[in-house]
Length: 394
Length: 64
Image 1: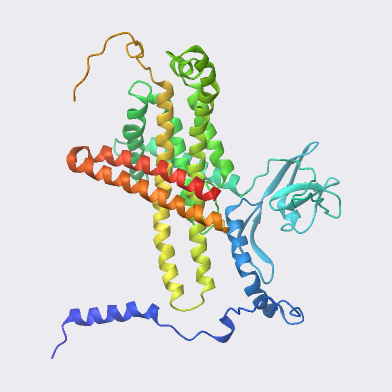
Image 2: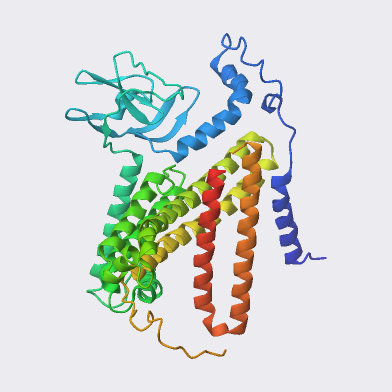
């Protein structure tokens, strides 16, 4: 009797699917002990491997949180991965640029990952929780009651990891778009990467800029909108890679982007817009005076919301992905590992969607605000309270 | 975040966001059902409102 091919195929597929669910017995030294408070006592006499294992149950929760926190923050060097047991880091240090009675440029390798004070021209600087403080030779930091150091901080213009990523993104965007522009000299249809970019650009123009800003004026702002969209998009996508570079999840960067939108709207706003803020028409004078600060605040809330939205979405996504990955290491068995891996994969795919979506929403709302600022409002016929209006019966 | 009021606050934020998004999605579906030609525009508007709502939800989540 000949077995039909599909039965063989199906059984083999089923067997393959079952393999990740086979659970072997946990080896003895993998179990996380519960009575961990007594573990650190008298451990240092043993070898380093034993030390880390005994410390692992105590510090694991804190260690995971510190690891996630470290990923979300900026860094003065580019660490690809580090070996916590031997203390070696694989990566390269980035230049630190300080302004402290003069320009001081040095490599962040002098900080030795936050352990030693760097000596530059007789001044000593210490890296504490990602901030640079000026100290003496021993690296002492004076703490106030909230455990924040009260040393002086020099002006910090360092080329940190985020700055490098933004510069790389700028170079990527430049290369991509100059290439696309050049390919138009050869023919109307772009080739290569341009085929991905052209529909996106047209989408932004036709669905985002023109409906919101209007046919006549959208051309002025297309540069800004396109830049913002692709900048945020590429930065979001870079943040999803395992390089561990989290740029748009940094509130300073989203604050700057929101500030750019704010400046673009304010400086290109026309007289109607300013009239609405400072001297709202058809409103009694005392109320007009009262409305002025409220309206000024109103112009600030919208960029604030832009900032918070992008920051919270991206960093929340990163935290979720990293927490799921750390759970793989917490449950060290054969069922949890692959299932958390699958869940992480699923969430990462959603994160890609979120990357696109947040870039799109930022751009859409920016164009909305610009449109509101730039629009001519044809107010003269609406704001006449004395014309009699015929009731409209729906 | 791991305080009890924080956790309750986070739960309330999620409930609020879920209800709001459900209402948006529901009315968007009704509108598309009435007028299938306008599906693209309705979808775009729905996504914008969803993003705004998510922004509020995330901001509250971070504060909690």
